[in-house]
Length: 171
Image (cartoon, rainbow, N blue to C red; front, side, top):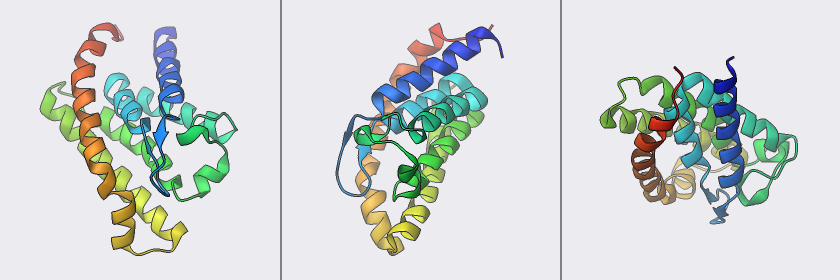
């Protein structure tokens, strides 16, 4: 891997580590800025590097650095109610980067939405399993309250990405 790619990947992992702990505890699944960072990682760095930066962030949290929502960390986060969403971050980054090939706004929004759907699917199924709850209950707790914030994050990514793409390129 070229030095420039390694630096961008490490920087995006660092951004995730800084913004992800900032959260609002609203129950079993907190509202955090992690998905914003994951969306940016995939769109800005592409499928491979974006996913790698998210994986680095997750590994740092799993080994004990307090980089998850509410400054939490450890494998207990992975096996708790939010574990499916954390694994879903990898899919959100990969799908966003993989599908955002034409570099147009509709492709950006579409790629993020596909990634978000997979994130919600994995996270909600995991939550249902861990919390022993119904689909309706899980959707009410884990999906519906997050839709407005995720829409705002998508808008923010759409505003930030063109400026960031002017700086980050791999020629």
